[in-house]
Image (cartoon, rainbow, N blue to C red; front, top):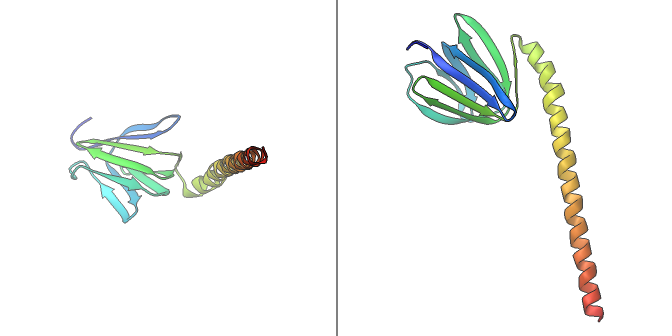
Length: 136
């Protein structure tokens, strides 16, 4: 890697998704879009769900990202997100995001509902035990 490129790494919980040298990065934080080039100052920011862009030799690449964190230190940029889908066209990403992210949200909702039901069952059982205790 030379001084004119950034070493970009995008990781999701299951794997290293992208490990490439890039010329420029455009991403979105809670306070808006920002651009990173090799000589920019080091910093850390949260990322919001959206489209993450990176450029290599005039070619544009896009990655749909979920919430996460970006850290720039020297020429290294590490991005850690919950979910990500890489592609070359936004229409492809939109399709994939709908399928993958929404399916994961349904799974998370089902897990949350199961947890709420378990909590309600535990409370109900404690109330039954309390009634038995006072009945004696």
